[in-house]
Image 1: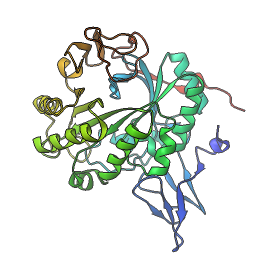
Image 2: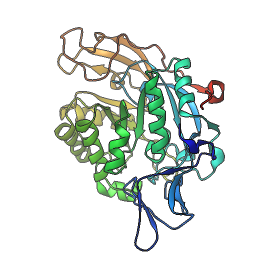
Image 3: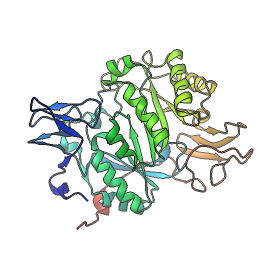
Image 4: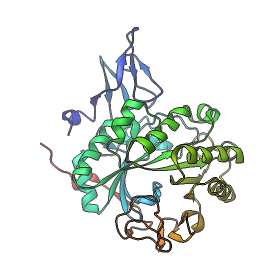
Length: 369
């Protein structure tokens, strides 16, 4: 528990340095915001106060909800179990298509309607029967310190930690962050620098570096999601480039989810993604060697299910977030051919299903000395 918690969610943070011109540069993410006293970074929740940098949302959330783990989406991490999900406010990217813009673009702290210490979140997860806690809705990169403290408290109670992130972070904080994460779904928004610069307000290369780091330098289970936007990142060429890169740099066992865009935020003039686009993307991925390719945000039982990469047997049947077929041993081997299904499995699947249960953390408050 950080001593500064009681000061309205404001704590001093690291990952910054002073510039010769008197400004302070935030080094948490590749934006490298350069700030005068009183200014905030683009994320809005980290800023300069006097001669230091602060986070203003420690212990404060835009809400808590128990979700199916498949909603993150994570299809190979404790299937069928429930996850306690929460986010704060702000974001360090500027995606014109943001599907959670009311949270990620928030400049109003009344968005932060609930508050909880890390110990309270861990206690809530235990009492609610959740196997994990997810840092989601907005990007946990910007509430780095809070997410890590929650993960530490959860690990003390044998609760896993899940990061749902765009992966836009610099190497040093990235290494510290993923020491505490058990699983991550990284939003690979596209596979062109043009898209990242024009539509997401960032750069592609730092995200690719994060993906390679998670896969090769940590024990964190990794899955990838790409939201396909008509005319922007859904061409055959880009899908070939993306999936070939995944196979070459990360390996064929990393699951890839292609999800449907709906008009939102500043891209209301773009039509929703046709289901056929997702099916085409999944087909390209499989042809290029991806073992586990999925469709999302559409009703597609075939595209949502897991198949054995060796014999083709349906290993996990899914209809939205409800599991049906189960063809795996307790440790994740195919019952038909014995091949290992990549992932994290702990015995029989959970039975949470598609339920969504909002919760108030004040009901689980833990006194901390």
